[in-house]
Amino acid sequence: MSEASERPLLYVITGMSGSGKSVALKTLEDLDVYCTDNLPVELLPQFVRAVAGEGVDAQRLAVGIDVRNASELDRIPQWLSALGEMGIDHQLVFFETRDEVLLKRYSDTRRKHPLSHDGLALGDAIELERLRLKPLRAIADLVMDTSEMNVHQMRREVITALGVGATQGLSLLFESFAYKKGLPADADFVFDARALPNPHWDARLRPLSGRDVAVRDYLEQDPAVLDFVEAVEQFLENWVPRFEAGTRSYLTVAFGCTGGRHRSVYLAERLARHFRERGRDGVLTFHRELE
Image 1 (tube, rainbow, N blue to C red):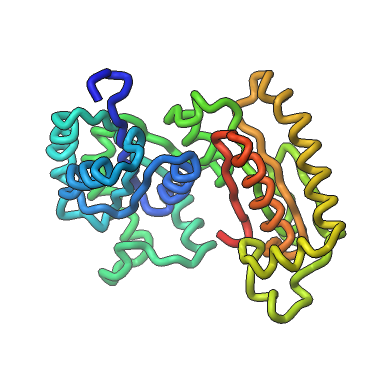
Image 2: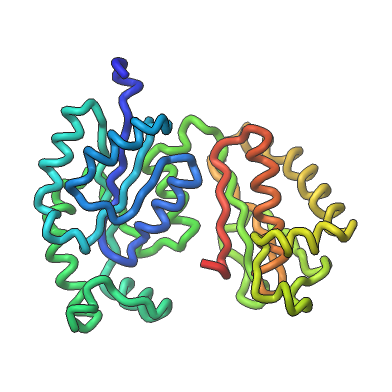
């Protein structure tokens, strides 16, 4: 690729554990960026060569690197220079979050910190991670502080700050949620699916989600579900272009049901597929109760 405008671009996503790196990679993946997580630093050039060699569209790539690569972190500048010599542009993005916010997030999710296996208390693990990642933060092209952001705001910030959706027009996020846990704060449109048949009451379907074929088949055998889908499709086809013609760059459409596992998930996936099949880029999904 000889033209500068056609040079591949690699996003290197790093930063504090619990700060939103996984959300960033998932958002980029939804926008057709070729992503991989926790790649050993020394494999960066080989990864890019392998992806290009497989015939994959290597114009936009992303890798996640975290503190588990501690022994190699000081070599990142060297490997980034090697990428530049290969004709690959790169952007090092560091995700940052205040300590007290990280403590709360770990408490809420009950997940283990990557350094907790060393027998450290959570606060000490966060402090050690921050110390180990300090050199990376210093050379980052972009530092993104997510302390005050929820998941939706993180996704929007990734799209706007990295310019991933800049050439794709309006980005659409289809979200599912459970009414019993509250409405999504950032939804632009909310559709209530609780009037539709509930797979929860079928013992075979209860452990599944709206992503599963058995649940889709169960729902689509009911004409009311298909009528609901058609009505929402027509509504959005009429109104999405009007939002796109304005200054909006992001639109969130939420579907709610009782538990947030079956009907709402099915509808979010179905509508996302509908718009992707019509050639729209920048279509994302997020299932709040499945994350």
